[in-house]
Amino acid sequence: YRLLVEPASPEGRLPAADLLRRFDAALGRANVEYRGKRDSLRLGPPSLGVVAAASYEAYRRRRLSEGAHDSHVKTPPLTDKAAVADAFEAREEVPWPAD
Image (cartoon, rainbow, N blue to C red; front, side):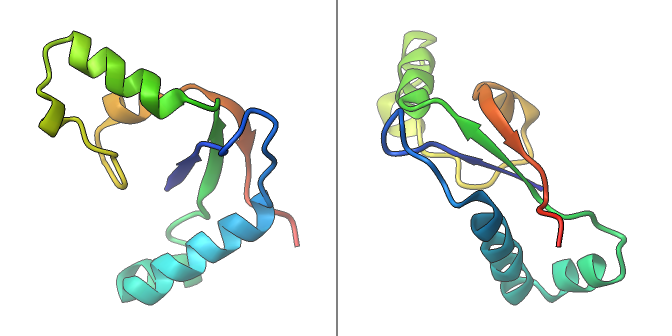
């Protein structure tokens, strides 16, 4: 899994290690299969991509200019579509924190 986040401001800093651990724990609470695969090491830890401020708004404008209807351009909270994730260029990649 790869978590993409957009800071509230250009100079915004994220507590990346804490965020990744909380994301992993939340996925584990929500999905016992995820937790089992993480515990057995069949699934690696999530990573974090920090995208530039206003990236979502740029994505939204681009989709509208391509002809998408306004009501069809939604925040992609979870997707398996590589094209959606690829639309957001990460300015920083944060791997799983070393213990």
